[in-house]
Length: 479
Ligand SMILES: Cc1cc2nc3c(=O)[nH]c(=O)nc-3n(C[C@H](O)[C@H](O)[C@H](O)COP(=O)(O)OP(=O)(O)OC[C@H]3O[C@@H](n4cnc5c(N)ncnc54)[C@H](O)[C@@H]3O)c2cc1C
Picture (tube, rainbow, N blue to C red):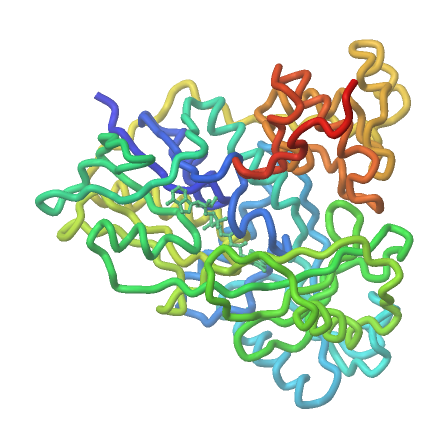
């Protein structure tokens, strides 16, 4: 009989583990309390594939960041998601900061980061002419990249489903059931489900899940980071990700050009009380703007189109907690406290979790039907004219533009719904509709209509993302 595995959480870590384990002959279920993948921090972060010079040598984070970064090239080949290795620069604005670059350089070398280089002022400004002219030097990491956090997570999710994984949404796991030091299963939405192995990838809530399994050796603190996003009109003021010299407890406020062609700035770092408080604040956002302006002085508020925040899962141990517990809770595995660079490290974390299952003496047999290939939804606006015509001839919905800012067609939106988008955010994450200047002012109502039509639901059942985020409540005028 196949071993039954449950994964708690469909953030990037849960989805990477699901996809990696689908290569083997297991019966895998993912329980997610939200309505879609990605949830949690995986849908609101800087979306940088870090090179790996930030973390201390010898830490799990440091090791898995460099490993995870390297895996992105083959993952992109297999799973076809937006990713570009455009490099990053840490810039020093004075000689004291220059010393920090040297520290990072040595740390990066120890961690195994390839091709790191310290650049002079002239070399730095040649690469990025819009940087603060006071720059004295920079640390250049050509292996750093940018990724679509939604695109990558959804790609893992779709490929895991294709290879037999079951995802259960709106399922809140209350506790893991461990009896006589062995996992028996879990309780979700009040119902017991039997499992041989339970993997905890519950982000900011991973300490609570772990505690329910009898492992209470750490806490997770929520640390919020806020961002601004700029309109395309601002132009490509930077082509690489620009970091300041490192701050006490974070990589500092960055300026980046993202895979959607937008300039993004942030995040600040604020310890907060509530684990899921993704509000933005005047103070936080002005800290972000002032921090970014130190790096790129030409930034101005006129071109800002939106702001958002994400919450980091800061572990009390200071490092990722990726462990099994053969003595205390056989079959329970933590992938907990996955703060930055968790997105970068995600696939290396998944591989480590697979090895932890092996270490329990559980037989791992190949899934003979595993198919590693997944294709993205065609991005109409980026296709050559001949391919666009081919798509329209096959399906006229590709000739109907719904999102005018990002030029997203009805064909792409319908395809996203066929692949599992159930909410407006689900469509947005899969197609980029609504990412542009008008922020859904134009396409929002049309996407609601298309969702209602395709899902055969009344209009007032269509949600933004969570169960209680309905767009339309009732008719305000008679017909
Ligand atoms: C501001 C910010 C910037 C960052 N920038 C970067 C970056 O540039 N590069 C990088 O590599 N990393 C970055 N990170 C870190 C990265 O985003 C995280 O490490 C990664 O997303 C963590 O993924 P996860 O799957 O562990 O957690 P999450 O994405 O939070 O997913 C956990 C999931 O578990 C679900 N869940 C929780 N409790 C339960 C329950 N009881 N039952 C069922 N489901 C449950 C949640 O709904 C959620 O979907 C950043 C993070 C933040 C917040």
